Length: 239
Image 1: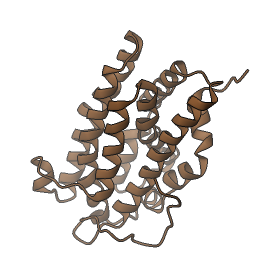
Image 2 (image 1 turned 90 degrees about the vertical axis):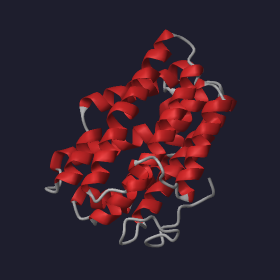
Image 3 (image 1 turned 120 degrees about the vertical axis):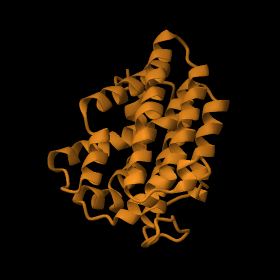
Image 4 (image 1 turned 180 degrees about the horizontal axis):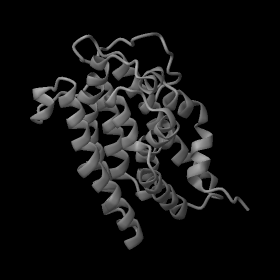
């Protein structure tokens, strides 16, 4: 009998891709407080647009919720994005110089942001709740994993310290625990073909997490994401 939950199995199966995302050079510079503000501004210009679609993807998951318990977890996940993270990202963007188009809802997605969000929408609309969770979890889960170790020694720059604190507390970890537990409840870990399908979805989302960091890290002097990477990183295989 397999005592591991499916979420742990997906995490382990995609360990290399996961490590590349959570240990990205941009993440390390955030933790050190050395990332140029304009680069971080470029991240927020795209992340606001990403989160607005991410919230819609979670909304699609609500339609597939199997029971009241699933509705409860997914509703609080949705509220977290809409009432906390989107306003926080807009506030960070304003502090870093703003972007009128993004703030007024006219921002344009970079190709990476567009591809990632279309992946999330397609899975959450066309597949069941478990598949949708496999798609959206890498974003939620990886941010907690990034922030928690950085909480012990936050940088002096309040922009970076406050961003880390957004994801590094017990409440955030508790919600991640609930969403991963929901996936574990929905899927039999001994169903190898099913787990393999979910692992592919999970790993693809994790690949896009890495690609998003690469895109943001390449932001130019005006905070605009460029098409070329800031340095040659080699993201591995295709999504």
